Length: 278
Image 1 (tube, helix red, strand yellow):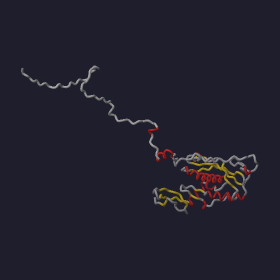
Image 2 (cartoon, helix red, strand yellow):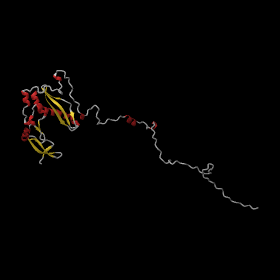
Image 3 (cartoon, helix red, strand yellow):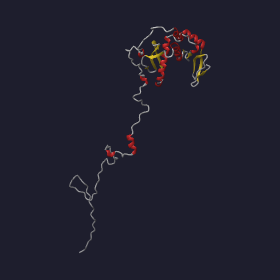
Image 4 (tube, one colour):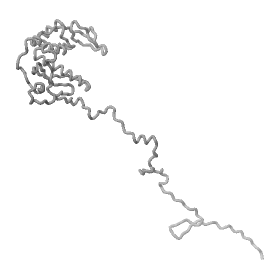
């Protein structure tokens, strides 16, 4: 009996794929991992407002949290009145039931107006002709008497303390002008009423404009009494300008702008102008 040897190959492993059949199994198959389609998105930061998420308290942020904001340097305190709203300076209301003249309300009273004439000495002082040396000339050709000259004339006529200006209303402040009504009281009686006015360019100039308004009212009240009445006489103005004034061409020392101004013949050209040959 002969012996035959047969060589047989080793059996290969069989891999079965999973199917929809629940009973099928996979032999020697490596496990499959499944990942979500959003697994590559960056992680999002939590927006929780819980106290645990707050930063730790340090000396720096603790001081910043307790510091109150500073007030603006341009803020105006609530108790400061804006000058453009007016000055709120109405004359006080006085008791008129008393016969005492010291309590007379000159903001409303017309006591003594045209009740009697001035004395001869007072009238002579008021109507005294104006000296040419006292008259000034503005660059635009307007002649005027300085305000202090009106006060000197009133002092000669009534004596220091014998006259005064009494406000007859509140100061009115418009966009560019300050105006107020005044009454001139002399010898204990009202002698004239006039409204003064003065222009201003900045709100900070309103207090100064109120003084100019008072001076303007004084000049207008004096006009009623005949003081310096020549300044409103056209013939006197033409004669004075011909004899005492002249027109000159000048140049501004900064802008080099040229213009013609009027000055007194005995005055020098004021700064910032200098004489120019046009």
